[in-house]
Length: 223
Image (cartoon, rainbow, N blue to C red):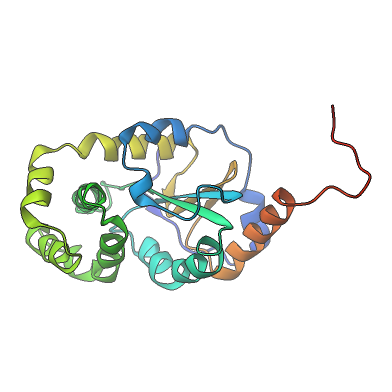
């Protein structure tokens, strides 16, 4: 059964590492066909590591990650070519009634090539739009702030073309083992919760070192 809980941070790094159990790689297959993965991806295509962040724009713990932790990850791992980061929509609509609308808005922004500025604005102003009965007028002010043409994003939203993409994201996240937000699919395993930077660093450094390890002199590759 799919959980509708948002995950708080788990303080013990050992518990997080233990949670990185091997899982079937279903996430990419569920989302690659939407055509907007590059627009919501940061980092080099040749980066040794790929992280899929499965998040809900209305989730307070997702906001905590986006505001407090992700900028440092971006600076030290994504911008340096170590990590490729992909955002996957996982709106928990039973808990967050405006999450699906925000996800569709973000995807229409992706179509306009402005996903990441809107991603940042949605989390920055989450406390403003999340409690609204109708968040649409406020969301449109974010489009203005991100430099997106209003007519284009309105047409995209009215068409409903992003709804099946958001649904496919959510289904892919669930099939990959995510049960709460935020969750992170890291090279075959799931890490749940808005973990502090130090926890991410320990895991990413360990996997990066293993994946980029040079063979010892004189060693032979297996036949």
